[in-house]
Length: 226
Image (cartoon, rainbow, N blue to C red; front, side, top):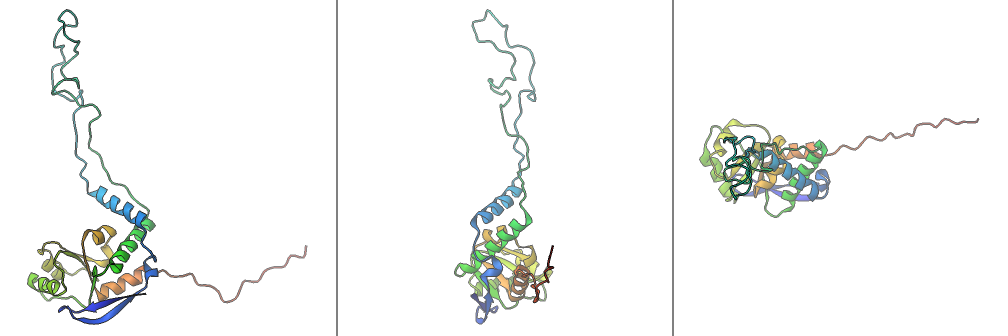
């Protein structure tokens, strides 16, 4: 069982939050986490690199000189890959680098990413509440400064809040997202996680595994007397 301090917007500790490692898989699954990060990184690749083959190069189709009698090597046409400005052999072509993983593996990677943030010292900051009446970047920046966040962070909130999002979007290195939409790449791409107490409760309830109910009485076994 882990205990994380709960802080207010002034940075003062006002309580603690208990988290069971078993709700997040019990251990960090590094290989699954690595595959998930590769999947998210591959989805961001543009994949527009392209070269022209000799069939796509615009040039004359005639021979540069006759086949024999010149003392030079034989040449077919100027689009040959052996010539400057000719086609490229086995060059890159536009492609899609994306690949998918099973949903269970993606959820396991997300649990492992959360666990790395919880286990690392000072990587997770639990905030008792975060609300704002109208968009004001100054208030969110002051809250992050009081919490000791100076290199950027991921702010996980319980649900979408337009005022909070508009207040945090102009702060360099700060990214805000509802806790239900946070993935493993979001968690590992930022040095710190700032999560509200309501978002943490929603996260734990969604991650908690329900054990199958066991009946108190065993089912009767039919006797076979032959």
